[in-house]
Length: 293
Image (tube, rainbow, N blue to C red):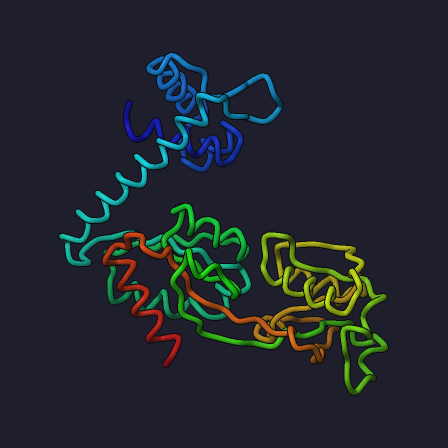
């Protein structure tokens, strides 16, 4: 048994697919299948129930998965600690960024960091805030940017911006003429929201629930710019943070919407009581200094 076998096994379970795991790991499917067969042969068990449409763990697979994650985390910690001996002359940092956040706040910071530490590589993973928090928790990524609140028992963090969430409508929409727009004014509108990977969606739905209505959602996306284009095409209304609204183009108008929850607060998070490499710690220090300057 070697670490690669365990890594492949964990990734297959994560994606519920041999082919998707192989694609993510940049190996061929026969290679990953052979690794798993060797692992099964070594333990004399079947790890996956292959009779189902989706890859499902057997009872033996569940037991091995639990221990494999412990072993892999221990191995990663060993690698990270050895990496520290190089005093930032090398390193690799995995950072999770929501698509909306990455383009607004971090390109310049990452560029300056890479200029200062050219031997440290940064892997950026774009995903929604909910998925990023999950990936930081399980160690898939080192650092993430999410929408607050977070589970403070799991994560350390620092916040860096608070923004209003604004209503985005077509220029001809009747709400444009109103002096003050509330959630009550949009109860009967067709909503277009980010998908369930994004904490911003949860915040909007929670605010609607406080006003005792469930929005009629006609379109979901992981792309904020597409939501803006759909609003410009009169498909419906959408709600997005102010910095994103400033980047939208087309026949749209952004309006303040008066509600106590119509804002978002962003934070950088990392797993509490978990080892972080010197490179990751230096990125946290560098980013905090730049974001608060």
